[in-house]
Length: 241
Image 1 (cartoon, rainbow, N blue to C red):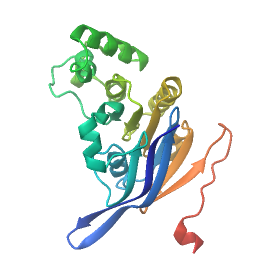
Image 2: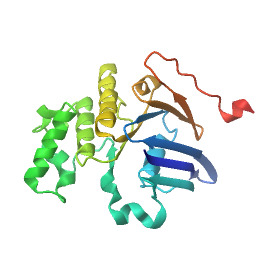
Image 3: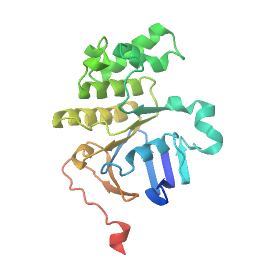
Image 4: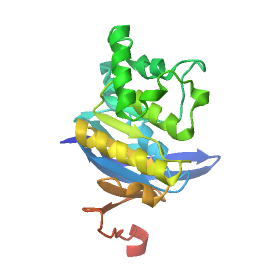
């Protein structure tokens, strides 16, 4: 089942009178139970793509569909509460520096369930990502890897259908990156969640079900069917010309 579909999406930014093409006629589908990884250099447009996929930013052209509905139609995302179905893994910490991580993870639930139930679900989410011992810790006490795990718990505590992860492995060691990507893959498979993650390097993408490359505004796909398969990338349009 396709949960997220980008259809011929384009996006440009302007620097003075110069147009910078970030996304050029990009199409992408992500299915339930699938982890798709997109790698690319810094400023390649990975975060822009994720923000458009989340309905935070609008594309200049093209369509973004989530669960078959057009995110751009009548501000659908805001009006229907569709944001609860999309989780975001970024680098942001709690709004209050002294907040316990348990309370931070529970926060998205407080408008929909009682405080006690929110705390129970947050405890389960922290344990699920391997951060159960961080419940009473504060943000400034955590390592970068621990912050990433807590941020994932914060994003999945509402059990969204789609999880968008913005460079969750950036700045982490090799083993820590492996742990994070393996966790995202297991979340996709066990919960039937569609997961779209951006990564700074190709090795970080190899835990995914599909690997994509973003550069010069173009999204290129390579399929990986088993751990030992060699990934071959198709030529760019300008190389085929």
